[in-house]
Length: 356
Image (cartoon, rainbow, N blue to C red; front, side, top):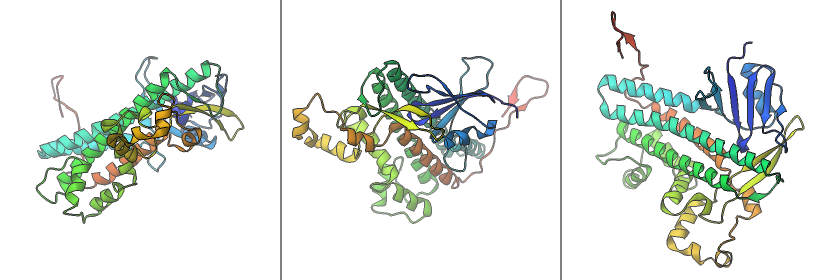
């Protein structure tokens, strides 16, 4: 089978698989010395399943199909569910809903659907930026010549990783609120203007939801559920402190993964602070600063090794969170009062102009 494009598969931890053809597939940065390691890929379409059989977690893929080396990659997140490109598909499908609304003259729905489409693509790109920062962090640590399993370390790339994670979390919550605004536009239960999860939950204290989509939103946004946790991370960043210094100072963590083919690969982990809701409340109340252990080690308040190992990884969390948001977006799209329509560009006979 003909190999159609060069592909760079993003793997959790900053690892990459570079695929340039049937016999040119290798892991990067490779082993502890940074040497590339060739891997066997059966067919063009088996790339992702072959990678997963090695024991690696696929984040997404850059497709390079242009004639120039500097061509912008076509980036797509790889879904762990049945839909291969769930987020990309939803970004496209919501643009079709926007076009359908435009043709029907529903300007409000057109605006909301356009924003949802844009934000899905934005969040997908934010995951790529975070993945790129992981690769930079891993490469820098390997090139330092001091890579050991289980190290906690901090360098100039660590801050960039956490900045990328913060940007994703903020954009993800913007998408969350756009989806809430759409839900309220098509399923209003009052005259209130609802454009955020906070305002919706406040409204529901007096008028609880009864429809299936409303009950699902109420469930996933309840304390401890995934949409609530996402919001807690966003609120921590916006209303309290940066991720990396909100609690104990967060460092990068080195690790080594053993593959099914007996190869060992280095990776990095950027842990997220645990219990972001409590951490925000403690900081805002001043309780955080009354901690005697923090006062004794004001400038050495490093996350404990045991806590770092058990903490959520920033890239893994972002990828999983966007997949959940994309599934939710697909579910809400079923409520659209207009049919999704694919824009058609029609040339005007006898001119170089077109009609959409």
